[in-house]
Length: 233
Image (cartoon, rainbow, N blue to C red; front, side, top):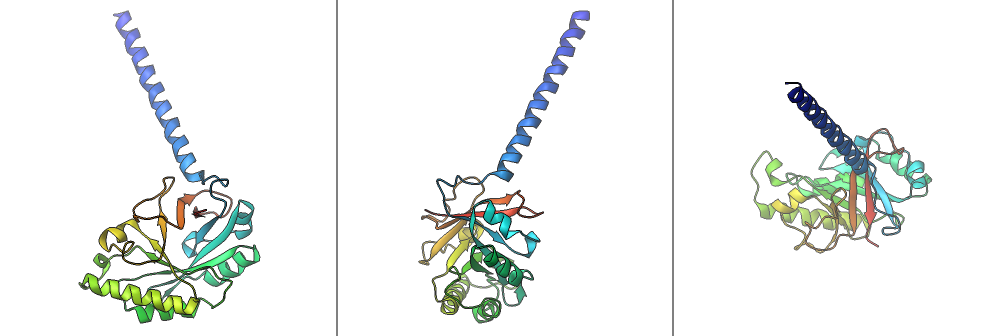
């Protein structure tokens, strides 16, 4: 009887030890993922994507941590505008970072209204990086049914209008869900910006030029996690 109790006690201790090891391993994995960035020797050009959702961001700190550029969310669809864009633009430039602007595409809205929103927010200037168009909403998000051809047509019109304003080819910040629903990577000849924390993404079907390598980097840059981006060497 005593031997059985002793064996049961050892079994309980072993299970507790295994649970502790699993917890410690989980904490290490979480810490690694939230603090990981690609090696600078492999990707010398690194930066961040920032907008009002990130709260106050210290671009000087980002530069000190190795950032060379910042893409800033500027406009969304036909009317939404990022409330921090102007101050983020000024602060990022003051920190010595190259700066680019991002428009979030709304597949439910005509391109003319969206490009007007972008033009109102984003100045012209050769000092700006190529504009980026974020593609994450799909036709399924629209209140009324639309044909896929209409979405493709409006997207191409928007690209041309934004490029006319910027004087540079746009980059497609392509979400995996959007690519699955509206495959554009093979149809639109523009550079791709893909997303995948820790693992290099391949859903674009061709090489990317920008990669959001950590979607929630914990750092001294801000109170909220930031999106860390690298450029293909």
